[in-house]
Image (cartoon, rainbow, N blue to C red; front, side):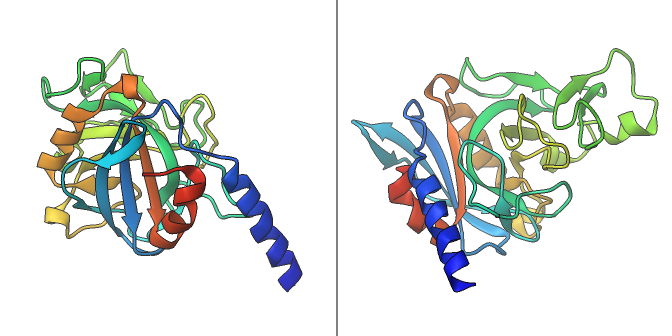
Length: 241
């Protein structure tokens, strides 16, 4: 049994050593949690300058899934046999992910000109139904929501913490796995950080707005989220900030 676990560990190291943070990524948000079951995270923002990563500004606090973290589906390789994120498991996806567009209830938001922003209406849906062919995708109806399914998927729910959000490309199109976890975003935290999430990463509103204003899609912004021990182990292998 010990020999089998040793081989799993060796193969995991081989897989990990074959991956590096994308070379065209020069903006990176790094989130480090105390452990796999932690719902709090320490966040830092880095930019690549002169071939090396430099931290910009101070670190800030965030909240994660109420049950902590689990390996997600992103740019990184997952360890052999690892448990992966599932829909409604209460965990935030760990790994390396691209950062995508922004959605919000506001008419406009301060952002980089190349970063997409959509003001959400009552017809905007984000599908969290694993049985749907549109799972983990944004849809816009050509009519007002009428069915229970449509109403449940509405992005506009008069919920201020969800009124501004940036997509974290976990289990994202075109490689979406049914029941693999959906609707993972950066958004405003609840109760001034006293509440955990269902899987998103949340933070104080001012910091989220700063991040949205800073991210430049042409610099391939990424998000690295790992427990401390995994971050320490993988940092040199994956060339993380």
